[in-house]
Image (cartoon, rainbow, N blue to C red; front, side):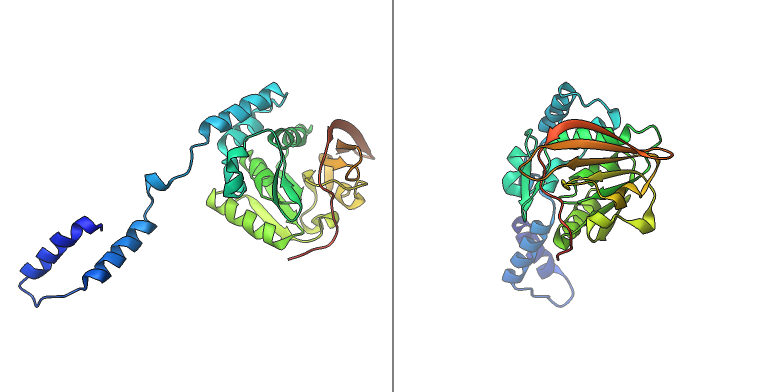
Length: 259
């Protein structure tokens, strides 16, 4: 109902054979205004980021990310949904963005690179543990790639916001746990892959123990302010094999939980 309908509505009511029903015009206007506000309006939609998303994916190809599942996922997902509105104009730039409490949303290249390394294992990667939910974007990319994602976050508010974002995007293959990430998720182990989105000084043995044979742990290793390397740990039948890749800069991986 809009304000243009009020004269017609008043005419219908006054011409009825039944006793006249008088509705105050102020009430009608308030109701119409409320309905109009609740209905989707094309004029209220935000910017269309489709072009920027495609440009980001093309840049990822030029930077060496080639896994088709990863590229398709990042071309599909609305990255702008994972940051505050004030930062959305920069969300497809090749940089990290703050999400609060000293945490960041990783730059697109790092998300693509880590996802590609994870999925590059010699075994099918179906069940993935993520340490550090953060904004929820990395988990969303892996879920869009077809993985069942088990994500752990030590900051409770981050976990709830990420869960709401995933639900709005229809991503139902993600499970959530509020706890210290150093402990992993033993009750759901083993995992085909583990991805860590913050940097420990040393690789936690508890996480390595939760890999299947042939599974990969992708983790940035090193103290903040010092050299960090993106490290891939692959579990073999009797041992673990380490490979070192890009120099990176991540926030430190912290113990404990907070609300």
